[in-house]
Image (cartoon, one colour):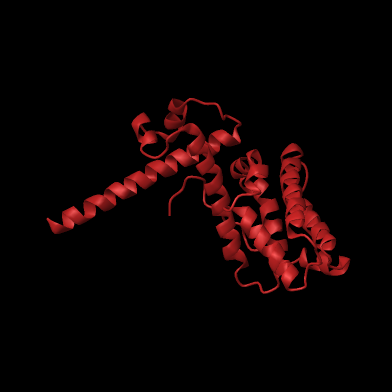
Length: 219
């Protein structure tokens, strides 16, 4: 009896987690398609869950969509942290994160469109990519690798460059995404004070694979 009583809550929690993940994944897909003003019924049908399950997790469609964007950003940001954890040079950490994010637009177009759909508002968020980019810029400045006077203005430049690059790659599928991302990263490094030669060398270094789990997947 003890084992049964102990396992039942665990099964319930796993079931709730799967339902929430399905709702978030469905919301991310709808956002990527530009379907924001959809009925909650359509969301639950896309997630293959009951209508009542929706309100066990979210109070409104807007709350779900916000969670979908934030979780997409957090997931990508956590992956970047993992891929950059052994790099000591903060300028390279910044460049590698930017280059990998640039490649995300083709590797994971659904997530890319989720990011682009609300990117400017999320630039001031304390979750996802924005705080990590700020951290990397400030670390590079403190280490004397970046010559910048106002990290917040530098962050604004990086945000605009990242979002515009993503939109450009969607609008022009013939463009080489890796080449474009590396060129923008190189230009940013030069803007922040690195020499043309060093900026180019850093942005030509091999990258680890960007192996991102699908939206809505659970560990």
